[in-house]
Length: 275
Length: 253
Image (cartoon, rainbow over all chains, first blue to last red; front, side):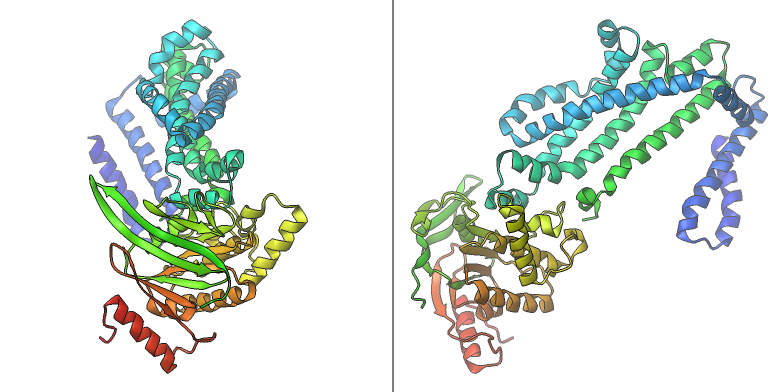
């Protein structure tokens, strides 16, 4: 049923668009907006068709969004989630990048630490929730700890791999010009690994934003995840649930946009050119 | 042919690699003396071990037997007095042209760095590109940066491993004449690996011809022609014929 609606909506939207000769730049805006409009229309039709009284229509969701914005508590929850994510993320970057550089450079350290890291890495940060509450109680401490865990592994493993992939010719150049010790790290190892480190930061931030919502639903009493749970428990307000979900998605896009700015610096741009 | 003292001396150098449990001999008993300020090309078919010989001279690899010495001291490690110009670009893509060039002279004072860097940038023809990044440069210009970075440390010896191999044929010709100009200006000792017969004759004072694997010195041929060399001159053709003959290939197709 749903698939049929999507197909119909796409056909209705795409047919006139194919007659318009749009530049590729215009297509990048027009096509996704057209598809989004089609999907929202389909969502509205589905609500009317099924006569659901619980699942909100787009209009109800819009009203719920306005209600959230007017109520003062939303900003408190947004700030709580962002605070935990940024706190845990920066802690993880502060520990993970230097550690990854050392593990990647020193074969002995790699041999000693890699099996342990690979063993801890597959444990979902969600599984750490009971322990984080035990250690830090209900609140920001537990949230920051969980985000630290979820960001630490992608950042450390990504940095390690980045260092181990440094081209032999750069290492030889450095040796040939007598670059060693700390200067070797500063002038060669870190800059050579930086593009891949930034990619791992981007992955880690995406994971962190996924994890914080789940963590707040289970073990915290503020934040966007808690807001979703609270809206459902306090009278099945699914309009608030969906409005919050959309907000989570939008904030996620903004976070990714911000971290992608790092890829534009002259010092790392070389790492993203197609080879 | 040069009356200068010996700079780089290879004595009984052999190298074998262990692959899949078998020893593969790539270089066999290489004996060679290169005089100070001399321009020598190592010419041979691919896989003959000439790049390996250069890596050993640079201190990046150890010989299985024999020794390489520079100024009478055995080579054990890379050293800024002997600089390598790599086949693939060894310049750092994360640093500007200027920062690449001052890599080997970081320890000097600001003024001295400035003086030297500006000097080599002008010498290789990169003026105006000091702030550019390698990805903004053409292949030929990247290779100029690589040469400038090497010249900045005023090396006694420059090792070049097919440095112009990745360039188009016109750029390659320009780079050869530029290299000769720079060599005549500063007279470093140059060891230049190539598999291109024309390149060897255009550049070198002596061409060392290697056999196919295991690499052995087949013959050393003096190229007694003044620069700039006339590619159409009969003497040039004679040297070329001789080299092709020694390499065991026909160039009349």
